[in-house]
Image 1 (cartoon, rainbow, N blue to C red):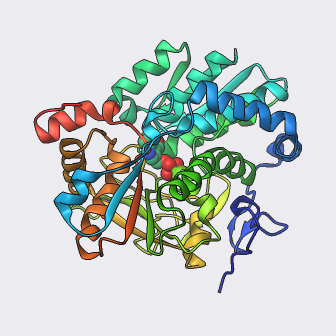
Image 2 (cartoon, rainbow, N blue to C red; image 1 turned 30 degrees about the vertical axis):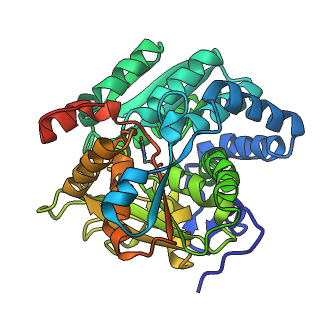
Amino acid sequence: MIKIRKGVPLIDQHDKDFLYGGKFGGNFIPETLKKPIDDLASLFSKLRKDKKFIEERNHYFKTYIGVPTPFIKLENLTNYLGGAQIYAKVVSEANGGAHKIYNATVHCLIAKKAGKKFIVGDTGAGYAGKMLSMAAKKFDLKCKIFMGAKDIKRQRPNVEAIKKNGAEIVPVYTGSQTLVDAVSECMRYWVSNCDTTHMCVGSTVGPNIFIKICAYSTAQISRELFKQVMEEFGKIPNKLKLINCVGGGSSAAGFWNEFMDTHAEFIGVEAGGPKNSKLHAAPLTNGSKIGILHGAAQYVIQDKEGQIGLTDSISAGLDYPGISPLHCFLKDAKRAKYTSATDEDALKAYKLVSELENISPSLEPSHAFSEAIRIAPRLKSSEVIIVNSCGDSLKDKDIIKQKLGSYVR
Ligand SMILES: Cc1ncc(COP(=O)(O)O)c(C=O)c1O
């Protein structure tokens, strides 16, 4: 049985081989990347202990990202469903409209410290790309974003934002033309350009250092939520559920981090895909085997030969065959539970939440809302559910209009 060490930050729970729980993560990388990855890891390890760097990070989190983001009670939804009290951490109020801005900002700060002038990154839903292009512009870095051709078509508003910020979009036509291929192409590009270029991986995936930087950055979400919960309830409620969607896993890791050593329950919601399809993007819920993807060992959707399997989800941000080694670790340690919601469940949840409340979650967090809506009526009114509303729906307006007939925000 895998054990979580109390008082040790989640990102540092690995062993000497960078494996979480002795089997997830690691650095399965080509020899040419060993030095750049070691250099980045030693720079990050210095920076995270450096008071000046922490001050600088906090300064930009406050004045650029606009933290703290709101923590609100969803009174109408709570009354409509009966049962548990439902709250939202409205991370979509962060500059740019989603949590991806934390990781992008920290990566740009690190790239500057490393003396790099170029930065590259992957994107699925377009938020990681939008935020990296925004932060690159702010910190005067030249930026390239790798994005699958299928995602370029379905996430038009974010594609336009990336272009407006002056970044180059590199369309990826290989494989399923989605996030998994974008990450692969971005890593391939970095192998040949790592002397001049910094790479930002858009989620808690990839070789260990990228998982660390990303979860370190999104941890801001739970640092402020912890205080907001204490202000609202005077303590951690006896029965508290923190529900988050899970694609690569960066928003969930950041949402749970500060609560790791408390009794709060964690529920991660993967993409169940279309209702009547065998395809999904839910490796943890569907018992996928361990494999290597993007330089790390993790549960990954694969075919009989062990090749990466096909996925399908209405949510470009969740449409990924792997999952962060951090979540594989939390699942096997039984610290978090994972479930899935279908495309149809997410659309229904989006509709209900946006009609009843003054928030408009994108299709990724709508998966998390779907789980909250499903379980809330069965719980007592003394129980509390908090959903991470980690992204705004604007990027999904075309899909929502097509599926629900109209899009009102
Ligand atoms: C709004 C939003 N939520 C969630 C995700 C899923 O990513 P992660 O699991 O890394 O938070 C994405 C990915 O693009 C996203 O844009």
